[in-house]
Length: 145
Image (cartoon, rainbow, N blue to C red; front, side, top):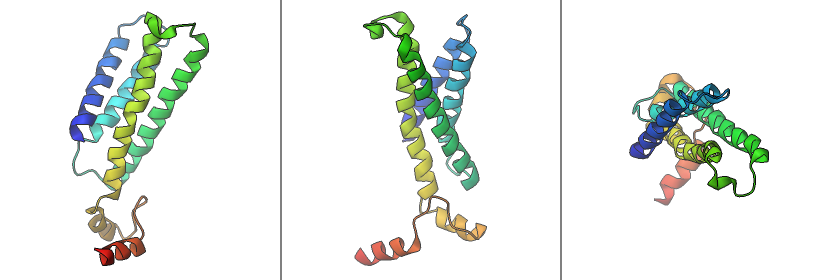
């Protein structure tokens, strides 16, 4: 999964760099959105992330993903027939593909928050994990095995 999120991060970083050189009013907004997505994707590569930081990145990833969808759907009224063949539609396609690319990134953060090793961290913190599984489910599954 780390390879996938690393590739996603690199692609988003390239898209951010490309928007740095586009003389368009919204280019810096796109640059910031792509850079935020790249930061979230690269953050999944850190193996021992703090629970609080993982939660923050999970929420940030969700927000970035919804911003990608929002920007794409804001662009759609301006698309003409056969919009996908024009060069101007590349921004729309980039936003749409970036939104779907954030799903594996969000999945990585979700796995971090639900990992078995989190039980030790929860005991140290003195409280259950926000995305944790209730103890009754753990007991039932362990009896089934």
